Length: 130
Image 1 (cartoon, helix red, strand yellow):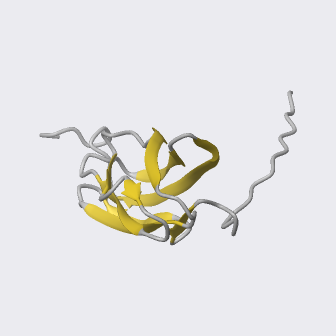
Image 2: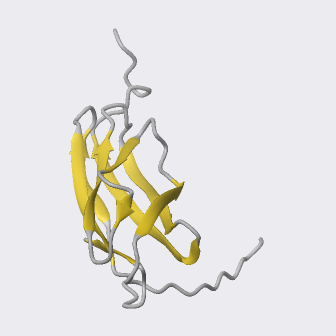
């Protein structure tokens, strides 16, 4: 039997962070298999200079479609970040995330967690015609 010890530090909602988002979790809650659902978050540039948002890592595009209304934000400006859950997502828990940063500012990197509980039978459990 092997054991692993993991230790990490996580800062949530850091007041010095250049990018601020609300709510702190993109939670689809419970959704039925085949149901299309959308969540929109507000993303704000809290820096005193203009910022260009880059997507570093995004969720699986077959499961979650991501759209940023505007990638360029002036000081204090906000934009909408929308996640759309695909109808193809199978039953079970879904945990993902998106990592963003401001261009040329590595310390601005943030990861927004995405979660859902997909209810119902998956297509694999009940193939068509059976």
